[in-house]
Image (cartoon, rainbow, N blue to C red; front, side):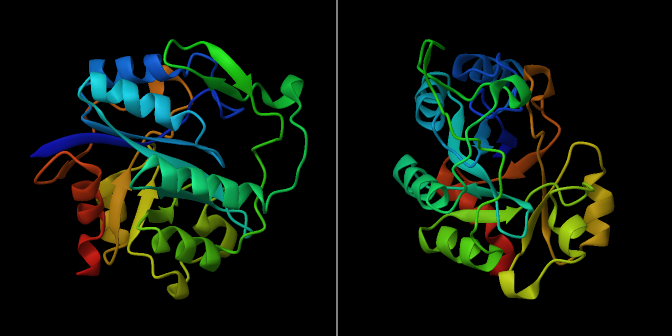
Length: 236
C-alpha cells in the first residue's frame, strides 16, 4: 500500500509550536489532509504522544511516538519508537542529560501537556529548547538499542542540522536515512545524497503546515513495524 505520511509534527508541548497544536486538532487535520501515518516529535519530550496515539486509533491514523532530540553537537535528530514505553524511557534519558533551565513563557511560549479532550492538564516548567549533553554517536546507539529509528532532521537547513553544524554526515553514526524540510525538492536531494533514503516531513508548528499527501511510502501493512522495515531498507 502507498501510505501518505508526515513524520515530524509538534504539539503545544513544544514552546515554539502554536497553542492550537492539540492532539485532536492534529489528528483532525491529518485526517482532513488524507494522511495515513504521522509521528509526534516534540522537542526533547514525548508527553503528548500517548493521547495522540489513542485518538489516532479512533480515526484510522497511525501515530508513531517520537521526539526531536538535540544532541551535544547541537543538531536536531528525529527519533521514532516502536511503543510509548520506549519513548518515555528516552525522555527520561535525555532529561537526565539536559540543563535544568526554567522556561520563560514570555519569551519561548507555553509547553502544555494535554488530554484527549484537548484540555491543558499540566505544563513542563523546564525549557525544552536546549541541547542535551548526549553525544550524537551515543544517542544513535541508544535509540537503536531499543529498536527505534533515528536520523538527522532537516539536513538542508542552515541551523540545527548535521550539515550546517558539522559540514558532513559522520560515517561513525552509520546513517542511511535523512530528513529534508518542506522547502526543498526530494528529487534534488536524492540525486545529491544517492546513498541515503530521503524522507520529507513538515516540521509542523502550526496546523496549516501539516502535510497533505506530498509524500508516500510503499509498505505491506500500516503499522509501526512495517514503517520501520521500510526505513531500514537501505541497510539490507
